[in-house]
Image 1 (cartoon, helix red, strand yellow):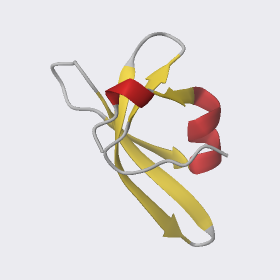
Image 2 (cartoon, helix red, strand yellow):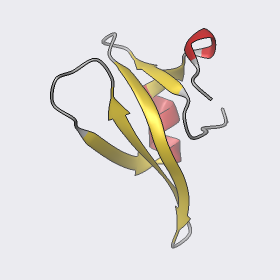
Image 3 (cartoon, one colour):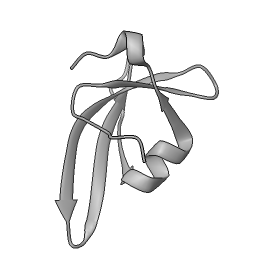
Image 4 (cartoon, one colour):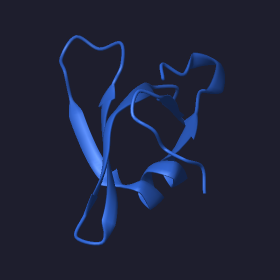
Length: 65
């Protein structure tokens, strides 16, 4: 599985970009907290790491961390 790290940028299939705010282990699951980039209104999201890597692809050349 692709490693998800705080500060990295990921892209969705629709072209939207997101950056990882935090990755934490809680009650047996690894949670990813992330935010959409390039929008006027801040929107925070979270999901299990398995769901995150299934939905998004790392933006290797765009990584912030």
